[in-house]
Image (cartoon, rainbow, N blue to C red; front, side):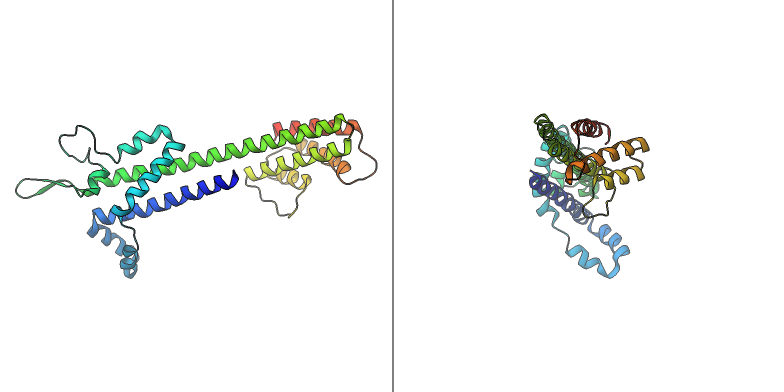
Length: 269
C-alpha cells in the first residue's frame, strides 16, 4: 500500500511539473513574439535553447488533460465540472468573445476578427487564464492528496498501535509481564517517533529510544514538563521489561505502563 501511495504521489508531481512546462509552451504558442521577448530579457543567449526544449502545447495538452481529469475525479470530484469547463466550448454559444473562449478553441487555432481591417476580437491568448486555472486545480489536488496521505498514515499507525496494545494486554492477562511491558514499549516508541515526524522534529541518533523522542518533544514545546516526566517514568518501566534487568517488573508496574501508554497515545500528538 505504501509503495502504491508513493507511486501515486510521484505521478502527481510529474503531472504538475509537466503542467508548468505546458503553460510556458502555451504562452509561446499563443504569443510567440511577446513570449520570446520576455524570455530573452531574462535568459539572453540561452533563449533559443530554452524555447527549443519546451514541449509542443498542441501535442502535449490532450494527454495532460486526460491524466489530470482522471486525477481530479479521484481526489477532487467536486471540481471536475469546473476543470472541464475551462477546456470545453460552452454549449449553445452563439458569439465568440473573450468571456466564452476556451482551451478547445485555442487548440483549433481559432481567433476572431471583425471589419475590413481585421480588428482582433479574441485570440489564442484568451485561453491562457483557463489553463492557469486548470493547473491551479491540479495543485489543489496535490494539497488534498497530501492531506489524505497524512490521514491514511495516521489511521494505519492507529491500527498498528491498537494491535500492539491488544497483544500486550493479552500477554499481561497470562502473566507474561516482561513480554507485555516490552511490547507496550514498542508501541509508545513508535507513537512518539510518529509525533516527532509529524512536527518535523529531527532525531540525530541512529537508533533513538523513548527517552530520545521524549526529550526532543519537550525541547520543541510539543509536550510540557509534567508530560515529559510521565513518559520518562513509562520509559523506566519499559527498560525493566526489555533488558532482563533485576528486579523483575511487577504486574502493577506493567499495568501502569499499559495504562500510561494508552493515555500517551491519546493525548500526545
